[in-house]
Every structure is written in C-alpha cells, then in structure tokens.
Amino acid sequence: MNTPAQPTVALAMRSYSGQVELHDHDFPQIVLPQSGAMEIEVDGRGGKVDASQGVVIAPGARHSFLAERRNTFLVLDLDSPGCEPSLADTRFFAIDPQIRHLLGYASHSGVSLSSCSQVASAWSALLLACLARPTPSAPQRQALARALAHIEQHLGSPLSARAIDLLGRTLLPISEIAQRVGYADQSALTHALKKARNQTPAALRKAARDAQAQAATRLRQA
Image 1 (tube, one colour):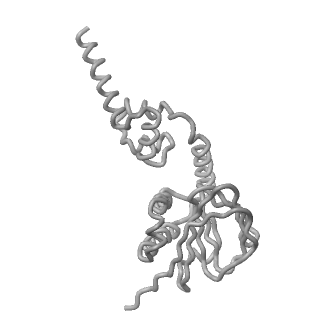
Image 2 (tube, rainbow, N blue to C red):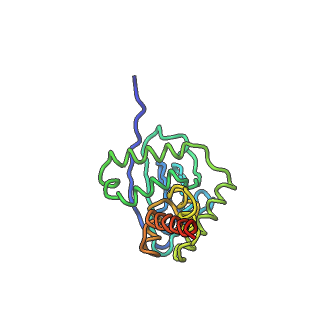
C-alpha cells in the first residue's frame, strides 16, 4: 500500500528590519510569531503576524512585509505537491493554545528544529494538524487578540493580588489559577510570584492554609 509522501520542510528562525519588497515563491510558507510583530500584505490583503495570529502564504501569492524594532519569526517553507489542502489558499489563523505550546517548544529547542530534519518534520506535522482544524470565527479571533494585547501591555505590572487570593481560598489547580489571572501556564505564574514575593504558588497556598488553621484554633480556644 502506498503511503502519502511527507512534505519536505525547511524551518528557520528569522529576524527582519525595514520593508521587504513584493515577491513570491512556488511553495507554501507559514510564518509564526516568536517576538515582535510584522505588517504583511499578501495579494493585496493586509494583515499582521503577532502574538495573536500567524499566516499561511499560498504558492505564488505576491507578498511584502514590514517589521520594525526587534523581532523573531519562525518561518516554514514546505515543498510538496501533495501538501495539506489548507495550504492552498492564503489565510491568517489564530494562535490557539495548541499552537502556542508548539511555539514554546520551538523557542527552547530552536537548535534541534533547525539542525535535525526528523525533529523539524515531526514538529511541522503537529502544526499542520492544528491548522487542519476548523478556523475560529472572527469574534473569537478578535477576543483573543484583545486578551493577548491586554496581557502584553501589563506584563510589567505588579502581580495581581487575585492570584494570591485564589491560591489561599480555593482548591483550584495552580494551572487553572494561572489561566484565570492571565498567565500562559503554571510556570509563568510561578516565575511572577518568585519575582514579586520570592515564593512559589505551592508555598503561598501552604502558608495561607497554615494561617487559616491557626486562626481556627485560636477561635476554638477563645
């Protein structure tokens, strides 16, 4: 039985400065954000690659882009006549949690992705599987963009007291508390708490429970 040929993948981390003139290529290309943002126009359609979305550039699509300040993008060039149907047309797509996890791996394992074709192919296959899912609606993409913009705008703000409150008075998993207060995952909340209070979420939760137990003991003894 014949098995479908796997696409050949060229994967690279790239940074850009200034504007790239209008050009095209005969293979599909996927551009994903790592840091910064890029204004891009594909076949007359304008958009942006940033923390909220990436773009598929279809074969032959004329495009130019402008990136300012410091930036890094993950660029996949795929060379296969039988590539996924979702790559046949240019489209912007939301960076959902699954794709965000893939980008997190890429940011920490860039050497493996760029130097090992097997790792790059496996990573790319997971990305293509994510892109094959139904595309979120426009309101969903807009809500995600607003949420991410708010998070990025307040990254330097002091840690919200709400996280500490939830740790002390609820039994919610720490990972869920992290998401509720705007952090990408548990490790991000842990990093913020260590920086702000020099304590981990687990240590703060234990301290709060110990304080509650002591208060209850004093009430019983009163």
